[in-house]
Amino acid sequence: MSYNSTPPPRHRIPGWLARNRLGVAVGVAAVLVIAAGGIYLGNGAPQSEPSSAANALDYQLSPAGQPASPGVAASTPATPSASATPSPGATPSTAAAPKAPATGWIPVDRAAWKAQADAYRALKVDPVPAGVGNLPEFRADCQYSHRLPDDPIVAPGLPGASHMHSFVGNKAVDANTVAGDLTKFTATSCKPVQDHSAYWVPTLYDNATGKPVETTGFRVYYRSLAKNSTGQMPMPNGLRMISGDAKKKKPTPRGATGQFYCAFYGPGDLDGIARSTNGNWPICGGDATLHFMMQFPDCWDGKHLDSPNHKDHVAYGSGNSCPTSHPVRIPAITFDIQYPAKGTPAGYYLSSDKEGKSASSMHGDAFVMWDVNTMNKRTRNCVQGRRTCDNYGYQK
Image (cartoon, rainbow, N blue to C red; front, top):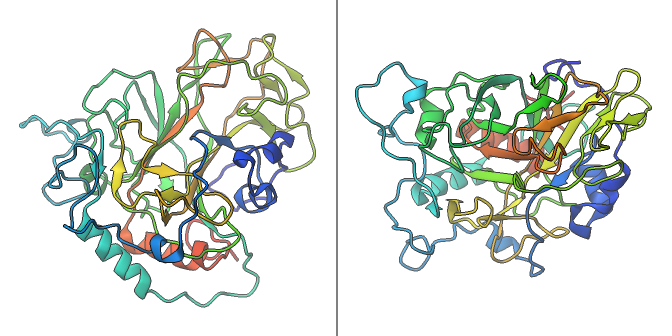
């Protein structure tokens, strides 16, 4: 089954999903967030104080028009520009050494974000054809691109400093990639091609052979997690996010939150018909194969494209609200990853936890970069308009 084909019906929800979503809006999470499987929530609990719709639409400018961030100069470049230095791994030219990628608190380019927000507000919703569903989402369907021990978010400018990662999306990504590279080198393993983003996860290995097991389908949803779309805004280009915890080392037995699960489009046991010898990995029956899902935050502070821990600039909303510290409602990214493996007694391990051989260190990175018009139109029609869309628009 390929995610580049016409999407089949969604598979069932693991039982532990109903206990997820940070204890709020459980029914909404089950229906609107994912009807396709489990979700790994990798961030902290949301703040309880809601924001108003006006805050969600604000540009978040300080009185002086400068980013109010700790220790960040307002002139720090944060979004793609024509003068951005390309990644040396993405071009045959090595004549000039690249500038070290920025890290820490990275402010959004105010002018670029204001222009995108103004264009978004000016858009009208396209007419909706008959038969279109009401799941507020659009998506990119991706295939495996390449594997490197690099992480341009956590270890920018440091080739080989990370555990092994499996990349999908932008084919030019390496440790030196900066936001501008994603718009200059746009070859992608995703559809639509207007998605220039890079997405990556730790590489999965077969414990018996030591060989990597690469995804055969990597679907990236952009969706609403709430009951309404009040204050919904598009993704800003250059946003970086991480879901999950690469340092988490806990067993993932049957029924555990954050485990790999078995899925096919029909009845079956999501926890597997058996488990690996260490109990951390399912063994799938019938036509089912290993899957994993993880969900990213849906609220943004409106000021920063990244933060020192790559999480503090975003947050999970509560119910229909974003916290006042992160008032801008953005589409929630969700990874739905399929692997061509059914499970074995020997089990598997992730590059982030070869010794523990559990799934608890599973995590994902998203470095967002879309054609701005496409991102705006998809968000307006599908997420704010609360209509089901595929890679190219309304899903008929």
